[in-house]
Length: 338
Image (cartoon, rainbow, N blue to C red; front, side, top):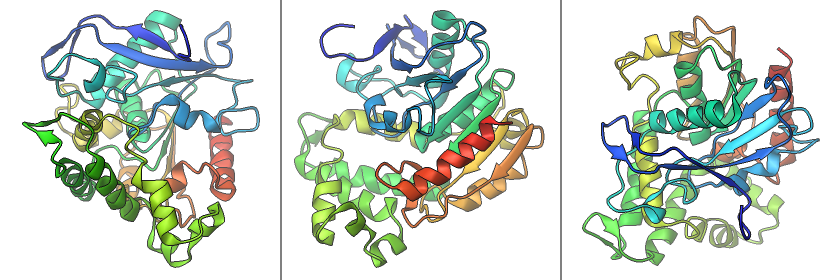
């Protein structure tokens, strides 16, 4: 590591993607917390979510947090397209289409080649991280002991896909989007995207009961401006589009191993499975997890415990929200006790 960089880089070399295209010198950025045990059996993998980098999600790691680095060796792999791992913003154009399957393949190499890890005590993920956790459990069933899928699903639902179409439309309506890519920062596009996201990410009850006041905002407009107007402007717009593509095409069964058969993919899972949607999440709907639950026929155990919260999708990443934090912490502790 050099300078202010607080993460490591795994250079995977030239990688053949699921599409058949070759990605030259693909790089995976990651950060570790805690100490790997001599038996290498105390590992928690914690993939990042949409637009997030490890620094955005490491808040729940701590001795009194959801994930305890005094007991576990925690690895956060940054998802492709997030600006730290290989992304449009740091790679030669054109950036190829990548998938969750591509991301999990490189993460698997990181674990096995750099750390000699053959077993994961837990894969924990929220949102796109939860979708990665599902992919891990299906693609490497003998390696994953437990998986916590927080506000995530095994494949992107049509309703979720349409939500992401609205996000893309808002962002790409900016005049900075030309010939299929952004040639400069889309200032208006970032704000439009944030306003669309604000309506979907939080629930009807969150706005009805003015729960934004609990975080110190003085008005609804104050909340929208300070929380959503600039939330995506910190990321490269082409990176955002790349990750939206990964999300929309997410499906654990969309690979040679399962041939598009979701029942077969879900039946491959052997882990203890915790499905923890947000009770009021508008795009990772509880009903999708309900449908999956009955198809996890070979899982060691499988439970569906929705987060009882009005914070919508954000219930699964409750920084500054002690009620939802406590619920998630207790559920993960119970899962790790199995």
